[in-house]
Structures are given as structure tokens and as C-alpha cells.
Length: 133
Image (cartoon, rainbow, N blue to C red; front, side, top):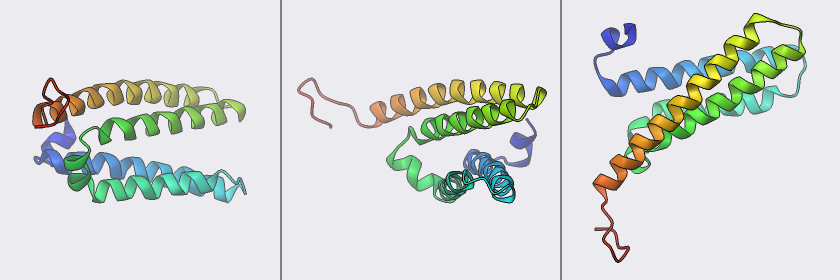
């Protein structure tokens, strides 16, 4: 709701969401790096990818409308990985929060993917012979 009032443009809201995800991933990458855990490398790569997606979102979404769903799945997987690591570290409430976040992200992934596929089908209808019009 707050984002909707701050950013009236729908495209800017999507960018802010991906930038927020990248910032969280970079924070966890730094934490892994600080504890000399080699898991910082994949987290850093994921953060860079999410930042690039945020910057190039309009271009990517025109060519692949299901991209939001794919990145929600990746965010969900990263949240599950963090929850498992926090459970192994002996934390109690934080991993549950990450699990709830992962459930929400996976739900949104399927919702966004379904909308993106429908939009793509409506934009590029397929004839009965299998050709794209």
C-alpha cells in the first residue's frame, strides 16, 4: 500500500521490489563473506542478477512476460536456503519468518507466471496448425 502511494507508476514499483530483493541478498552475501563462508559467492551472483533484472525490467518483460514468476521462484528458493541455515544455527523465530516469506514468494511466482503466460498467449495467438500469428 505504501509503495502504491509512493510510486504511482506500476513499472517503478516492480523495479523497487527487485532492487529490495537484491539489497537483502547482498546483505546475506556480506554476512557469509564476513564469516568466511564460501556461500557468499552464489549470493553475490544472485544479488547482481536481481539488480540487473531491476534495471532492465521493462526490456526483459516485453520479451519474456513470465520473468517475474521465475524470479519469485528464485527468491523463494533463496529464502528456504536461508531458513535452513538459520535453523542449523539454532535460531528459532527468524527461520519461520523466512519460511513464511518463501511460501508467499512461491505463491506469487505461480500467480505472476500464470498472468504472464496468459498475456503472452493473448498477444501472440497460436493458430490450430501451431503457427504463431
